[in-house]
Image (tube, rainbow, N blue to C red; front, top):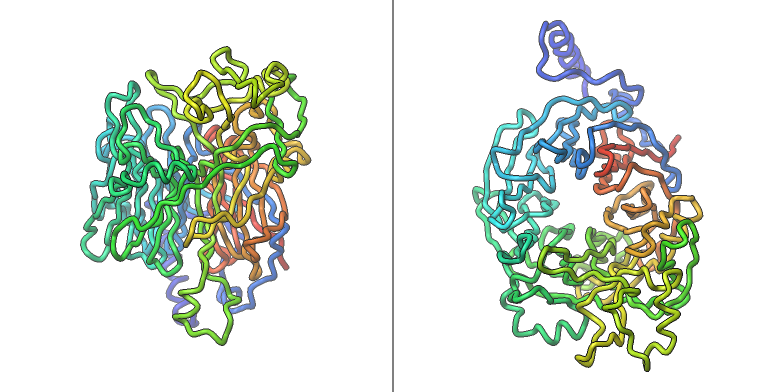
Length: 536
């Protein structure tokens, strides 16, 4: 910034502060605010293993801080607020992340029901808004980040649960979950919408009908298709989206179905469907605490149970800097493995006419005496009796007995090959062990999904690639160095608000203070927490 520009900006600031009214309040003085000198100075060293809390903002009650998105142009933070009798996006001045200031709210009720997700690109805010009722087609509504005026409303599939821009800003992609209504009398198809920004937001919505002929083969590999009377297309429920750095490919988790879909954005088609298989809790490295009784007694052990990965959030790492110089750009692109990181939360379908969840100790769960000769012991509440499993898997021979037991989620994060769907890494039980060591482990959730990893995002600090894993039931975020995505290394665990839902990384180059930031929004207490790595 030259001296003439600086002088002009300073004079403009004096004029604004002299006005009797201001459209939006100015932020409090920020000790780390940008100056001409700081912008030209060498960026400070940041320690990727030393994040600490720099601010806490109470947005409201439960549902007030589910998902956040940041606009580097206006230095604003946009936060979903779905508290009771509210349906809005709250806007904060984030120029000083040590003291975010509330500016205004964007009312969402004119466009439909709840807002489920946000994404920002090129000064535009895209919001995924479900219809009322949720089984109708929802909308992607695009706002300007300056004055919040509406740029475009686009009809997408039923229940858009996640929305994101491609890195180049050319596409907006929504994962439309298509959940059924309460009595399962209406079950919309699950879809993925691709919106072409430069073509006046033209939309193409994809479904999974073409994969119906592969149903049995896919189920044999671990895909779940089990909704009552549902077609293949109806049963698929897209959850979360990640997009490649070249904006050509997207990957979408199908949480309830235990799969990942690969999307060709240019050709606008679903190119692959990757079933994710199951996790074996009889192995020592995967040991779990399956009971919440006696409460407060945490005992990790091996058990004859499998976990269904069922990931929620997904992120992709595909821009490694260690490509070999002897390869051309085309060779590097063709040989590069996109590493998909998933938070393996798990989720059960619970409706008035269909519930898949049942405890192993229930009288309705009869264990095959040949497979489980110790069935009586296993069904004790201090053993497996309290563990929730699905009724839809495990009865392999059609009788009244279970030959296998499948619980929800994998209590971990995993890394998958984005080209083939092969699992390359799983954190096993490390998240739960680290949470226990930090006194964050919630034993009351041992019988369900443990620490319940839900959110995951990636970022780069001091040239190290990091993964941030939000654990809904531990109220914590774990930080891993994933510079080698095949061997993630645990760095740190941070306490968050109650039930962290949104995990947002802001890079130093986009940050209002030229420092890396982690923003965690928690849905149960409506609290935003901002963290920053130590630096000098």
